[in-house]
Length: 219
Ligand code: BG6
Ligand code: MG
Image (cartoon, rainbow, N blue to C red; front, side, top):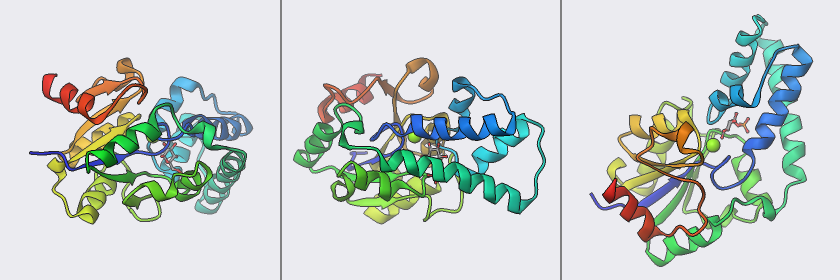
């Protein structure tokens, strides 16, 4: 099937916000007295805010009521939004803008498929809010990755079949979501962590659409 669209995860693929999610969760975990490392964070990538909190609470054997959980999630989000407020276009990940330009030249649709409720805010901060044909974010879905809902909504919104869409992801849960939706997936980051993706690139630097198609066909 001919690829007609790219669906991008946002945090850690388009913009370097994955580090801010980590820093904000780390701050919360420290306050709760829960041990939380950079490696532990890998499991939270791509996962919704509440599910991430549940994972941290579980690893600290902490049981809380709904209201307390809401308060902790809001606390983490306030720290995260503070980081976003101070972010500039420099934090767009390397090669992203020229890759988007190349997709335009090849008439490939571009969508965002993100678990984040802050996706539009983050895109606005880096001046890329208007570069996508469609944005599906955490405010529009009810099931978190690895459920494919976010990517399937993007495909439907573009009027395409899943097989015509290629997902870009930096997270284990996101790659699974793409595959659960019968979409191919390019991992962006460390091949040791993202090995289950159909192909892995370390970044968009020196990557164009032709290279991606070649990598997909020769794997
Ligand atoms: C994903 C991030 O994109 O969005 C996760 O990888 C984050 O780390 C999730 O928890 C939800 O984001 P937010 O901004 O709605 O808390
Ligand atoms: Mg991500």
